[in-house]
Image 1: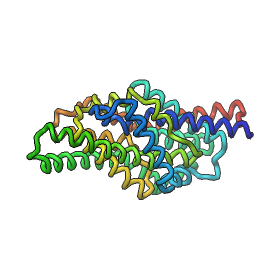
Image 2: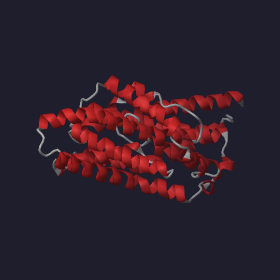
Image 3: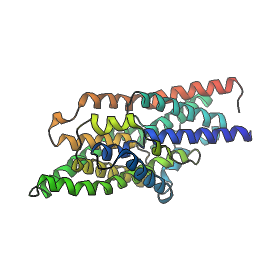
Image 4: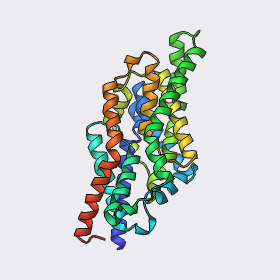
Length: 307
């Protein structure tokens, strides 16, 4: 049993690593897309703030994952391992195709799917946390998009008399701050999701997630330092509000919405809505897909009596 638990710890770290180069890549996509920082400098900058957030944020999100998804009395080593495997498999699939799906929702779906495989539908603790989690699949990108749009309009108005070159120089520096805020907000909400199952560190950011960075940083819309600042700040605000209330949200959903909102201020067609549509479909199917993979993993683990 001791070796089995140790194996689960290793798998949890694998999930955190994949979360790092998948979900955490979203926190550097804008600053890389605007060329304010090089890819290496950006991942080191983001990793520092992501790591620090795990120790400065509260535990409300962790408790929501631990107690608000499935009944705690049915949790077993097999269930935990199957949930992690389901999330890892789905993350790898979406990462391979460069689709910015949510590692957070993959973990929630995996945990729920393994729970249903173990104890049926009664395993799910339907209630406030599920309502919040599912609702924020829609709410978080809308809030992020609105925040990004409003910030861009506000910046245009505040700096309307300044020469474009000076605006660009100013926001190249300001984007360091907004990127730090986004990375810290990401760590505060995202790092706790795995801590709700087992303590881990999100070090995968240091190894990058360049497929995701490319999609978020340049394929959705063209980013400049000023729009990158607005998108990052808007995303950070939306995530921080959710973290304050203990709501697990997706950094992917939020920052994608912020990027679309900031890009739409140039003109509506500046956003590549075909790419956005693919991302949204990935959001919709992430929880059921990862739940299905986790359920299969649980049945296989149980069949071979691994525990």
